[in-house]
Image (cartoon, rainbow, N blue to C red; front, top):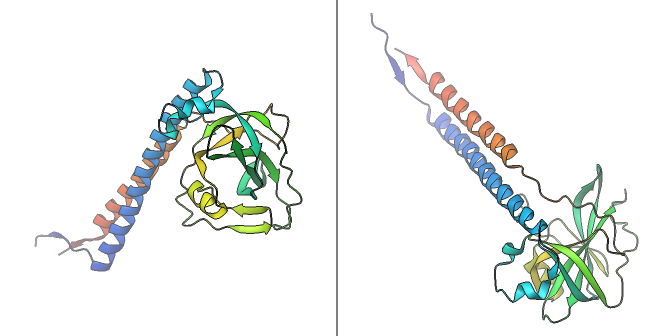
Length: 241
C-alpha cells in the first residue's frame, strides 16, 4: 500500500498563520527601515559635527527641508515666551525616570517660535507633583543642536495633561498639535540646548551613534521567526493518507 502525503491546512489555522507571518515580516521590514534611518542620521551627525555653529536664520534662507539641518549646531537670539512649559514624559537619565523640559522661544527676525529642550528633571513619586519649573527671563543668545522629532508609532494620539496653569505633560512632541493647542506657530524641529549654556537642567544628550547593525540583527530575528512558523505550519498540515 502506498503512502501519500497531502497538504490540507485548516481554514482557521491558515488565517492565523497568515496573520502571524504578515506581522513578523512587517516588523522585520520596519527594523530594516530603522537601520537605514539610523545610518543616515549618523552620517548626517558626523557631517554636522565638523561644522561650526551658524545662525539659525541663515539656514532658513536656504529654503531646505528641516530634516536637512538635523544635528546642525546653531545660535539664535530672542527671549522665552509666556506659553506653558512642556514636560516630555518617559525620559530616562542614568536609569532614573523623568521629563525633558521644553519651552517656547521667540526668535529675533522670525515670525515663528522655536521649542527649546532645556534638559532633564527627575519625576516625583507623586506623578502630578512636579514642583516649580524655572524658565529664564530676558534677552539671550543661545546655542543648540537641531533635532527633528520622529513619529512614535506606539502612541496613537497626543494627550495633553495640564498639571498647572503653566505646565503641561505630553507623551510625545507633535509640533503641529502643540502649536494648535497653544496658539503659537513653531518651526518644525526642537533645539537641544548645548551643555555649556548657563541655564537649564541636566543635559546629557544621547547624540546618535551607528546602530545600523543592531536593527539589522533585529530584522533577521523577525524574519527567522516568520520562516520557523511557516515551516511548522507546513509540517503540521501534511497528512498521511
